[in-house]
Image (cartoon, rainbow, N blue to C red; front, side, top):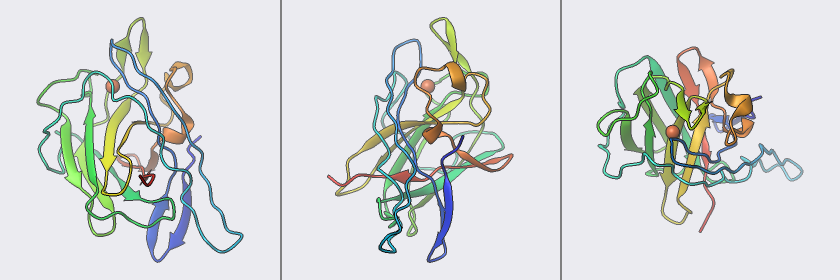
Length: 196
Ligand code: FE
């Protein structure tokens, strides 16, 4: 189940929590996890533990274009980068890469990076990635994501989709990394970074 929590903080967003790790490909990958948390005993809302780190997998390429479009498709991936107290991190870099709908990676497709806006928000137009074989087993659909900001530890993680038939058998899948589907075509995931 998704671990996103919804609450209002100065008109601010959905706070998910989770992040974590994973990777893909015929080469190997690792994993991590975290839990959603809301601490309220002193009135302070926490966004949960920082999103966990993991290996980037075999298909990352540095130097992606700064753009909000990964490639053709009807899926919007959006969210915010914030610290554990839900404060947005304007200017944080978000770098994403994924397979296409057929589950194939290409050097010049579905890769892009973007700086978070004043509210910490990011948004990419893309397509839902397809499943692909990793050894003898299919991986669930996922989007790779890196996030970084001055004063915070760089993060590498993977985001998953609800109801993927391979979520339950994937060794790297964790529910905390599920995107929240705001609609059939809008996926949300908020990233929590840890301070250096
Ligand atoms: Fe992958």
